[in-house]
Amino acid sequence: MAGKVYVVYASLTGNTRKVARAIAEAVGGTLVDVRKDPLPKVEPGDVLFVGDGVYGWRPSRAMRKALASWPLPKGVKAAVFGTYGGRPAQIPALEKLLRERGAQLMDSFSCKGRDWFLLGLIGRGRPSPADLKAAQEFARRVVRG
Image (cartoon, rainbow, N blue to C red):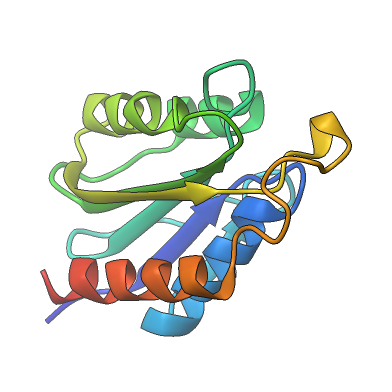
């Protein structure tokens, strides 16, 4: 039997938060904002979804710091998600950080987000309802294993 599901995320603009909420809703996961909430104690059999935007071609400092200090059991199942303006450069970095912590990577998901650093002109309307539906389908696939 699968354990608990945690959706751990960082979001400066709200794009990744929207995707995190959609994922948590789809699979009954607990939302954890690394900027506000303590990291959960993860047990073998739990499933982690870890998501972030892309800032300077990598995950946010808050997420990198959280992952570096988070004790994870070997082989915990994890999936990565995120939003981006240009390209999803944070996804491989998040995967690498989780692999280094002993997590077993299951899958990844990314979609465009509205780019607030360029006055919101790029990616208007993203993540879209179709993006959020795709994120939910991704989450269900991961949890099913």
